[in-house]
Image 1 (tube, rainbow, N blue to C red):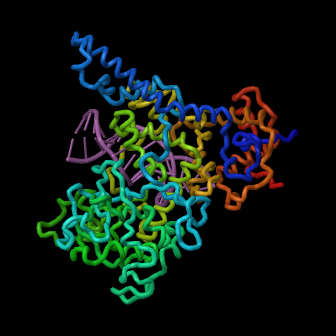
Image 2: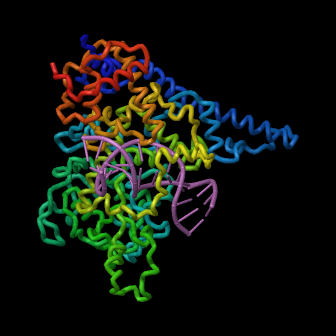
Image 3: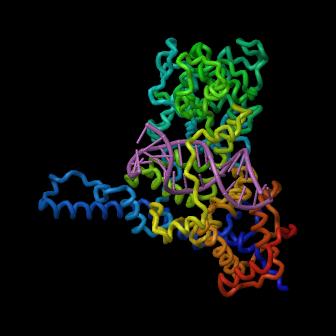
Length: 569
DNA sequence: TGGCCTTTGAAGAGC
DNA sequence: GCTCTTCAAAGGCCA
């Protein structure tokens, strides 16, 4: 059988070369995609402005018709949303009109700096200073995980206000209350003066404990490689520890903080930061409801805030030792939230921007937009968030080594269990209330990444993220993601069909091969990537081209896929 | 008042 | 190893 150079479909799309360069690891991204993307980028705001203008015009016309007034001067500035009774209506109109996949494409990080380590190497110069390249972009590291009452503030009389904290500890996160566009200050150089650390930060002996201090964060934590000369210049990845200018970023849990942090596997990245930022004088003596670690990590949520309310079980005195005491002990444990994943970080950063652009506030609609934008992000842009998320997970695991995602299971009210597909079909047939479709069904995702109709095309897929130096490690989940991007049956069907179609089209177009393995592939190849590789490199007897997606699908069905990858030349 | 909606990704459970 | 479920953020909506 004729050997088809399936590799070309993968690499030629991104550059027509092999996998030697990360930039060429974007699969399924062809010139058309780039063009679409470019057009999207270029016209994004223009389209939006045009759309808004149009909508405003309609609104004005309607208003003028209703009021009979033609006075422009007396007319207040029109707002697009005035044309719609519901945000989703406005969004639907937006989507209806916009055909550009990059509709919302804009500057990737308009509001926040970004902490990024180029090339995964040390961003620091031998002298400890941050290299210029490393300093080009930073991500605002507003740790987004602490969820506490808005009114919760530091009660320590010695530190009457968070802004007064000597170390500018971000103890108040207005998770739902702080405008995301509020700029964050960077680390204060006062506390990270190069070469002049506070005396209590002696690198050798902890003055409080007398225990030799762990090495500097940069020595142990590859994820927060802050050199003494750089920490005062850039927002640390632990920026959640840093308050804004006079504004608390995170609130202290009602119980306050405990110091030191006995349960912490004292990674140096935590040690020096914690000891420097949570000096004893700001620590309230009481530590009720504090996480055993005592770490004021934003993921800590006071049980008062989020725990399932079982106050009814509490005795009036609150110190009952009833059989439920064990449960109560559990309840006292603060709720440690999951670290945010890349998309969550992206959403947190970009939500306000989208809200501002679209005058939408309904999160469900906003999230749909953000989902599209996420897919329209370039690999590099996504890689930043993947890297950031990886750092968050790393830090989280350091802060809470015993924490497991399982701990949070059941902490939320149980979701309404989704019905089985068959049930959904039955429900549809029985004319039950359909799901609200914020975006049109016929064009559920217009991002350039989906221009082929397959979600596999998305640059957001971890298989492509793998290509990035900053891409997340190839975990099991990530490996499986490209093939389980959605559990929606219709999406799956679409996926299969379009995958077959893609194979067909790419097979005909491919001309180069996956000959030289990328250095990046020295890592284990994610399963999905292997699958793709197998598909693209060694189909036992695939024809060079198939006349139709159906034909390709037939071949796929007739020939079980092999995971055997093509050996590197 | 509290769950739902909606998105993606990580992680755990279950088979 | 795969699939499914849950949770993370967000804020309007709705029963």
